[in-house]
Structures are given as structure tokens and as C-alpha cells.
Image 1 (cartoon, helix red, strand yellow):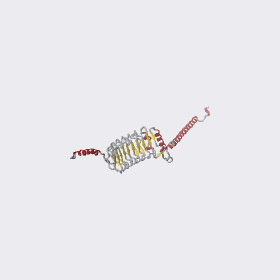
Image 2 (cartoon, rainbow, N blue to C red):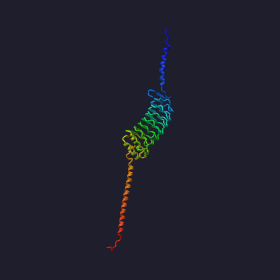
Image 3 (tube, rainbow, N blue to C red):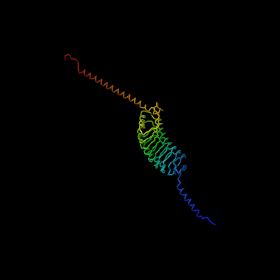
Image 4 (tube, one colour):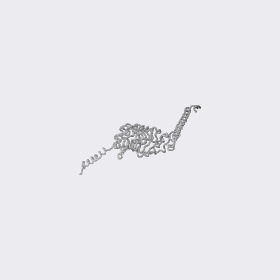
Length: 316
């Protein structure tokens, strides 16, 4: 009678064990409540009510979606193990604080979406390790100003969206470190008084072509504004795409009117005033000269009469 050989089963068991162990060993960790797609290195933590950046995010993550959560701040080193990440989505949170070195070790990152948060400023070291960043979206925040220091290392940046903030001033050299900037969105902020917005602010954008969005700001339509915009429009590589939609907020006589409909008239009153002043000064000077000449002639005639003296008949 044939009896089964126990040795014929054991190799199959060990083979299965050997095949299973490596697979289990290379399985990537995935944060609790998130979904990880290993084939695309995509980690989806969208809408999970997270209050902190989750741990155990796979090192090979290429795209991290943290939108629609309850994040309030990004601490130092929040992503320091995600060297290969290229896209970071943080929109629709309550982030109001970016701590120094929050984006350390993200040298390959190409896109950050920080829109719909509570940021009042970008920290000075914001761009220190983001040399590969091509797109920065920070719309719908509470940004008050745009400074050079926080943007100076974004040498690869092509698109900068700062629309729908509270930006009232832009540092003159704020865009000097952005040699590849193609799109700059500044619409619906608080720009309006040109003491904080000079022509050189945009002239420092040294790119082959940059498209600007500036509508929705409370522009004070005066001669200074007209001069700045006329200079911007004359620069070949700068394109104000929404110029037709820019409207005046003040003075009250022009409120609501498109700038394009009144821009040629903004300097007329000033020119007329200057002309009147010039003519007045000129007339005053001429009158003074005429009076001086008349007085000089009268003085000469008087001197001549006095030098002649009274008539003496004995001198004949």
C-alpha cells in the first residue's frame, strides 16, 4: 500500500512562506484614516477631520492630499521624510501659522495649494527649500503684504496666486527673485493707494512674458494711477489681462466706473491746473519786468531833469 510522504508537503509550505514573507515585508505603511494608492504613490487624506499631519506617510509619496481637514498650523519638519513629494494639497483648512522650516526637505516639490486658510503672512524662510516649486496657490487667506524675503528663493516659480486676500502693500523688490514667473494673480485685494505700489514693483519681473490680474482692488483713480498703469501697459513682457475689468473705488465721482473709460482724463485736470499756475507765474513775471522797466525809465528821466538844473538867461 502506498503511503503519503510527509516530505512532499513540507517544501510546498516553506515555499509559500518564503513567497509571503517578502511581500509582507515591503508593504508600505499608511496613515490611519487615509487611503494609500501604492501604484501611483498617492496618499489621500482628504476630508478626514485631521487636526495634525498624520504619521507613517510612505517616504515615496508623490502626491499628498490633506484638503478639507482641521489643520491649524504646520510645524517644523512636518514633511521632512517626504523627499520625493511633488504635489502638496492643503486647501480648505484653518492653517494660520507656518512655523520656521515647515517645508524643509521638500526640494522636489512642484506645487503647494494653501488656498482657503487663515494665513496672515508667509514666514521669511518660506522659500528656503522650495527651489523646484512651480505653482503656489495662497488665495482666500488673510495675507496683508507681499515681501521679498519670503519669495526670494522661488527661482522655478511660474504661477503665483495671491488673489482674494487683504494685501495692501507690495515690497518694491518682492518679485525680483522670480525669473520664471508667468502668471501673477493679485485681484480682489486691498491695493489702491500707489504709495505702496510702484511701477518698479512690476518692472522687476524679468521674464519673457508675465500675465497679471489686478481687478477687484479699491483703486483710487487719479493721475498717479493712470501714469503707473500706462507704464505697465507699455512694457512688452507685462500683460494686464483684466485691465478692462479694473474699476475705480474713489473719488466718489468715479466710483464704479471702469478705469479704461476714464484713464485718458485723469491727468487732464492736473495738466490744466499746472497750465494755469504756469501762465499765472509767467504773467506775474512779465508784469514785474514791465513795471521794473517803467520805473527804471522814470528814474532816468528824473535824473536827467535834475542834472539840467533851472534855466539861466545869463548863460547865453
